[in-house]
Length: 93
Image (cartoon, rainbow, N blue to C red):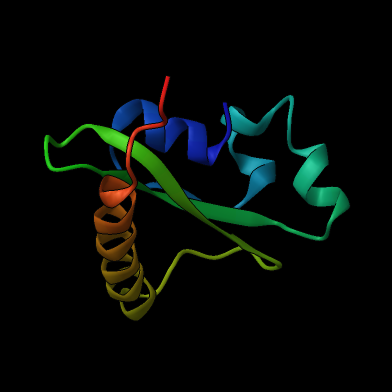
């Protein structure tokens, strides 16, 4: 399970500073590594009922964790995305 899938499943921020050191990426690490990415992190997007409705993933070309500024900025983006996603009308059946 990758970083975004783990964030969706747990409802928590998931940090993966290194794909090499994280067993969640054992079978998938070749995919981001082929694109030059070495680490990632993902934040769940939650609706008004606190259920996960998506994730916001960020990938890095170096081994690292997000800075506090990046976390705060992403929290603002996630809040805005949650608001927009909840405004989208249900498809007509």
